[in-house]
Length: 84
Image (cartoon, rainbow, N blue to C red; front, top):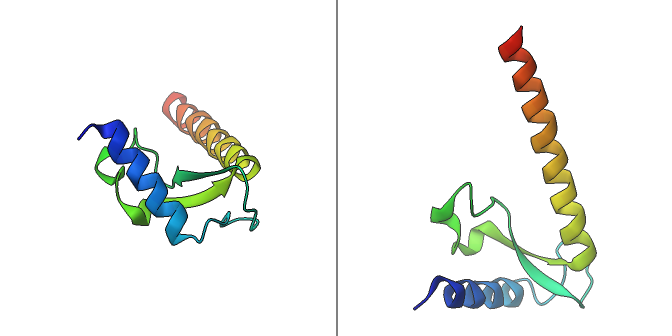
């Protein structure tokens, strides 16, 4: 079974577990399953249902913006420590 198909099945299970509602705002349309810990950081958790939550498109975008901001701030803080 391909990883793409396994992720598709994982997504369906996450959305079903969350009763097809966004876990942030309760929306029931434009839903997707979101990896809480990104797949590129922990590939071993990619298919773990505990590492997923259902988000609507708006909440999914907001979650990624917050995560990207956090990563940027963390990188700036740590680069400053390295040069100090």
